[in-house]
Each structure stands twice: as C-alpha cells, then as structure tokens.
Image 1 (tube, chains in turn green, cyan):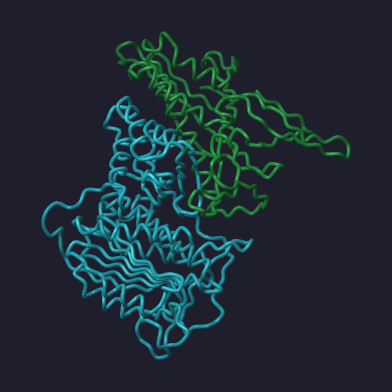
Image 2 (cartoon, rainbow over the protein chains, first blue to last red):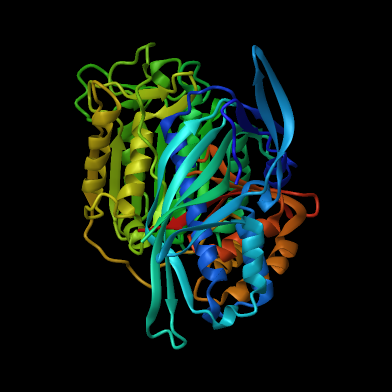
Length: 235
Length: 384
C-alpha cells in the first residue's frame, strides 16, 4: 500500500493517464481554479460511481466459474478492469511535493502499483491481506480451479461517495464506500456454503483538465482513475 | 460554436436520409448566439437542446432532421423560411425551440411573448403565437414549442443569475424509460407550447461564479425534469401536465423571484394511427449501420464471447485505427471518458453491464470516409 508522510503530498502527473486517456488530443492543460460547478461535480461523481460499479461487475464476471468465459474473454475483461486504475495497474509517475523548511521541491517519482486489500473470511476479521491489483486480476484468468469455483460477487448495498476532497495540487480525491457481497455455492449452485459482506473503501483520483477535442471544440474533461482499495470490515 | 456547425453538417446529411424513413423528428432550434450579453448562454442552451433531442430520437426510434437558426441566421426571415420548408408526414413530430431575448407589448393578453431573435426593430420580432398557429396547421402528429425568453417589455438588462443552479440529472434508463418517452412524444397527438415565464416575468440566464455561462434557467429545468420524469425519478405519471408542473417546481428553487413557465396543451384523443410504431434504435444521421453494430454490442441477450468477437470487425469497419471516442455527460459540454483507441471503447461497452444504450452525438470522418472521432452519450441502467 502507498503510504504518504505528512510532509509529502502526492500529485498526479498523469503521464500514465496521458498515455491512456488524453494523448492524441491537440491540447491539454491543467485548470487550477477551485470553483467546480456543482452540476459538473455531480456528473463527474456519478461517473466515479459508474467506474466502481463496473469494477464490481468485472470482479463478478472473473470469479464466476459457471459463466464459462474463455481465457481470451477473461483477458479482455481483465484489460478493461485494469484500465479503470491508475497506471492501468502498473507503477505510475507522480510529482511529489517535498517541504524542507521553507523550501518546496517538486520531485518526479514513481508511485507503486495500485493494490487491493482482502479479509480472508468473516471468521478471521483481522486477517487482512494486500495484493497488487494487477497481480490479483491476472491470477483470476489463470486460476486452474476457476471453473470449479461457484462464487458470486456483487454489491450488497449501492456504492456511495463519502466525500470529494481537493488535494494540494489542485486535483481531487474521492472515497467510495462499497459493501461487497461474496457468496460461495455448492457444486449444483443450489445451496450457499459461505457468505460475507466486506466493506471496502475505494480511493478515486479525479483530475479536471481543459481539452480540445478532435473536432476543435474546447471542453472540460474529467480524468477519473481508481486507486488503492482498503478492506474495512467484514460481517 | 464549432459543435453547432458540426450539427449543421449533420443536419444537411440528414436531409437526404429522411426521405426514406417513415417517422421523422423535425427539430428546429433558434438561438441568439450573437447577443453580446446572453449569446454564450444561448450557445450552451442550444447544445443542451441538441443532446436532448438526440436522446428523444434514440428513445422513440424517430429519425431526427435538424434546422438550425443561430448567429446571423437567428432572424425573422430565416425562421419564416424554415417553417415554410417543413414537410411533415402524419406520424412526424416537430420540436421548435428558441432561446434569446423576448418581450411583450403593453395590452397584449396572449400568454406567450414575442421573440426578439436578432431583431433591431419591432418589425423583426416574431410572436410565439404565430409559430404556434403555423405549426398547429402542420400535418405532424405532435408539436412541441419551447421558448426560453423574457415575457415582459424588452430591456437591455437581462436577468443574470449567479445562484446555485440545478444539478443535471444523470440519465439512466429504467424499464419504463422508453415507454415514457413514447407516452410524451409518440402517443400524444396535438400541440404543447411552453414559454419560460409568465406574462410580466423575466426569464433568467445563469453563470458560474467565475462567469462561465451555464445556460438558461428554464432550459436547464426542462431538460432535467424531462430526464427525471421519464426515468420514474419523480414517482409521478408521465404526462405533459406533470412534467411542466415539475419544471415550475424546479425553477422555484433555481431563481428568486421565480419565473413560472406558461403553457398550453392541446391534445386530440388518439392512439397510434396505423401500422407498427417505430422501434427504438440508436440513430446518428448517416451512421445508422454503426448505430446498429453498437446496439448489438450492448445487447445483453447475446453471449459476451460473441459480442467481444465483434469488436475487431466493428473497429475495422467504421474507424481509422487511431480514432478517438469521447463519452459525454448529458449536458454535452463535459467529457467523462476519452478513448484513443476505438477498440478499447468498443470492448468496454461490450463488457460492462451498465450501458443500456449508446447515443451517437457527433462525428468527424477521415479522408477515407472512416470515423476519426465520435462523441457518444452512454445511457446507463439504473443501479439500485
């Protein structure tokens, strides 16, 4: 998991996003104003929830042994799922503001790849494990026992945005709370063997840029990427 | 303004296309975009209106045909010619929209104002009632007339609001959404005319605190109320009365002192006259083939393996390899996702369960005729 000291504020250079989302557009510049119209923030926040909902859907698809998806299909799902995350699941470049006394230095660094936390089961609520998101999703494609697993993953409760905070670099970070329901079924899928609801917090990075589309129209664009996912509690 | 111009090209392309389609949605949009004070707001309004009508076309299965009057074309003569050129079939729909300055004469008892358009003298003004009279004679099955302008003697001091404005409704599609659009626009027969304020009232435009134009209060309220009522968010029956009541309720919270939309609803009792009603399909001018391919990609009744298998072929057929795709917010002025690879976009809409429909808004072609850029609006399913 990424850890930040109090004196270091992380900012997204978004080079990774530039590759994934913006290159090819004729102009991209940062907007530093703090006054985001409420209606715009709501549209962007709704898209944040869309992305989290998409992720939950993808997790459900990739863990569904009985759905019969081919490895190629799972690979496509995995690629699309990873595209939701910072750096597409790989380490990504950031600019870090380091305050030394009165001096402020901006340093280019590489942030670690995004990670996900899991709680092993509701019987062991303290057993939190952390895995790199890319590694975890890839493992689902190649899981030799996947077809024998009868697991259903979905939301027990609608995802909600707890807050959207502006960071020191002018970007935004949102925290989305989800309650992920995991159900394991027997071979014939007639009986539930195990069920838990894990509350998770998804960190979401939001960046507002002014961009010119291929048609030459100036527009505001929100670049929204998921970050680390923390497991809070299981029941 | 580039966007509007592109819409104009789209409209020209549609002129040829409409002759072979049964049901046409005639969309007439006039906006005083040249006005020094409120022109930028009118441009925002017109973009929002364009997006709204694309959704209506998509949900009802009608083929849109656009007639734009903005910049120097926002004038009496061009309006007269546009109305005279309308050639409607009996099942067609006409939507007329004007955003700009308006006013009324002392002693005028008509509830509707006159539109100033770009007029400098009174002789160039056009009374909304004359548009209503003209369109009521049209063969079209249903006519909607929306005017967003002041309804009191013209002044040089338009109402400029910086109040917190209405939050747009993110359009989702509930099972009843298509049926509700049909109730309002297809099953209705007659004419609905709405103007943004009652006699003696101003109509307001709004800016953000940093002076970015946000459009006009009524246009925002109408667009949002429509999205709310068709998706069932208002928990009310989908009728024109309820929709317009909702618009007025909404405006009460948006501007003080409030403005109250005045309207006339003239309906004939009827059902769909003859033959099958058009089935809802995504539309985009000459790109109907692409729309059909996209509809297949989001058709969850087809196996995912099959839909993903179509991605490469669809990308190759319609797009240049480095084509860009912008996924737009409902107001049409905000990019929520930007893809530099059409395959990534196509793969995403095939895999995600949430996108119920894709509405193609604008496009740009490369020299080889394939698409190098499209703007789409995702209509997402409601998630409980």
